[in-house]
Image (cartoon, rainbow, N blue to C red; front, side, top):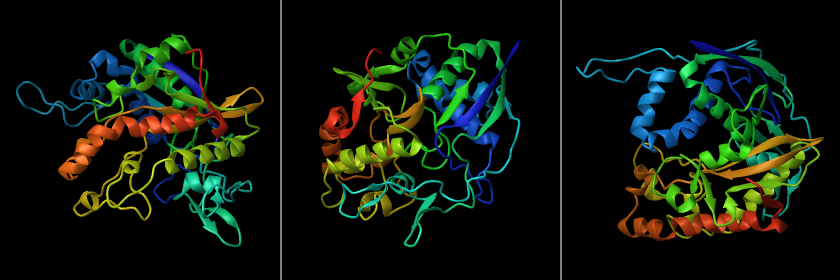
Length: 354
């Protein structure tokens, strides 16, 4: 038995979804990747947080070309999750639509949008923040998304869609809040509180695995913060840019590898020789994700932390002394970030009541 669902999907912030020519366009593959990403969080607990078991189930549900039968022969399969957009139209955003609010809290002031969107966005002296891509998807743009999946997978997939509604973003610089998606039409089968508790683990426990598998929580609650109500997405992105500056600058750089490198990598002008002297190039996505959510007549910016340890592939490239530093200071480093987010003077507060 197959279940069919249809949703109206829209963007709360501009989205940098590029096609083969780097033009912004509605496309199905990013949505399938988004489903797989949050399905892993939704299903991780039922697989005892084993990435091997999780990967096998994921392959059988979403399609694979690597699983093997007991006799060693290839056991490839097509995806049982089908999705279709009613349009693959190109993006209409060709000129950055608003004046980029300046962040003056750093030595060289920069626009908040540019600070959170380097790559898709660029700076021109005469114009300020401009689009580097030929076009992007504008905030408010929407399309119809149809899904079809096996009835036996419905529980995890509805949970997945609820997680996407709460945390999901798409496209370039999406972890910084660009491409914040809104799914209209989801009928939750679990309360917001029960959902978040089902996918959360103590912060220290999260750091025992080197892949994101749960929302963290500590003595103060879930690692989930919001800004106050903002008038629009531009205002919310400024608030998120400001908080990012403050938690990054709370950690200093030294010579070579520093604890600030645990937040994300690469970092402009602060390379780690051990990570870059041999391929593949080192990359570390920030575990702390931003999203902008509609709320009443405005929006709020949100920060959520899905903690995990420094990936083994990067840890083993460091010197023994640096590895010991990571072992001793990894939790403390992230607790410094949490303290900045907990300080209401920095513009955010913990989400309470969940």
